[in-house]
Length: 462
Image (cartoon, rainbow, N blue to C red; front, side, top):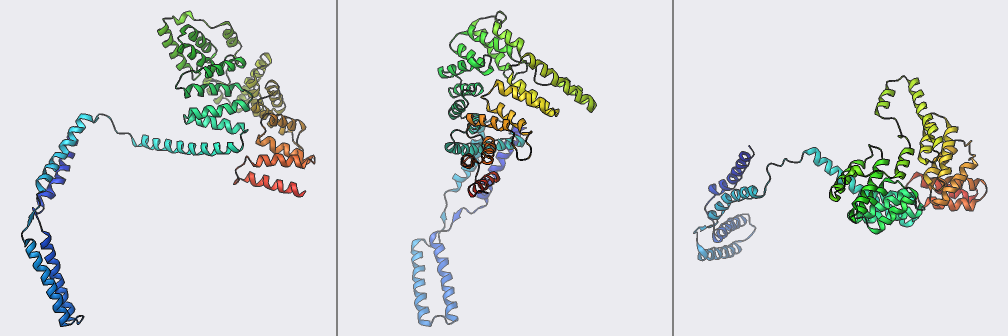
């Protein structure tokens, strides 16, 4: 069917080219013939001008004589004999050859069996290109802003993730370095830096990347990214047994539905085949077994639990949720070093409107991770709920001061600590904080105008 359509289209194209050639004249008028037609028109126009009195008889006779002389000259150049075009046979040959040649080329190089891209997929591709262009523009704007605020850890974090999404891995490495520096070696950021180093090296675990992952393991021994790439480093060095041991440990401490598990299993199978090692002979290390035994329970209910709760009456559902939260609380009492577990418990208590219990959970997380801005921000947020009118809780301000010690450009901390300083009569200190905050805000934003007005009031003593 496809070839019938193609042949039909070729025949139509040939006909479009040939028919005008068959119908057209096979001679073309010479230049002399064309000139004589012009001179005849000039003679007629001359007679009309003389009849209207625009020129006198003497002028008309002189003009007529000149026109006649020019007409005689054209007679000497070639008379009325037609000139044959000579291009018609060539044009006919080209009209016939063109579709034949196109068909031959398509047979040799075309792919009629490949379907056209559906309209929906083309639209999706256009949308993806548009989204990528917008992200690229935002990245450029963010990078320019960070030149003015080089200590903005949140901005560097966003820039690093955006560059990674754009697969600009070399630039992402630079951004992740800043996040690691400003975050005092935060293992999550260091692990992301190591991965960007590998991606920038086209999948090779470089010595710098390996050293980075080793440092991550010093604080987070079973960080999934670090374990995976350290195993990959061993495999690339030809140490198949060491690679499989590292990956077996990773598999033993990972949830079955972890997104990296399919890739990990394939890597293990491939490496075991190349090294001629029976995977069944590789057992998790004692440290991995202990970690797996102490691993926190799943973060939330599974699909069956969710479906069961949806069938419950509101009171029963609330009771079931409370039961799960209390189970998490009991587990954390037995395993108290799970920072993110305490944060989840704090959020859960807030959902149940148990604010005192939420505050205690966030306080525990802040105690375990005193250098993590995200943990301290959670704790500050629940402390702010205790504010009465314009009075900010002293403990809330104390936590924000700890945040500023880690991240001097933290927006909320600059704002609230500035308020506290202004209330205490320390106008210069408050002005310094708000000026710093002003430099982080877009000039066209409502917040920028509000801070600017606050500064003006502060300086005039209002």
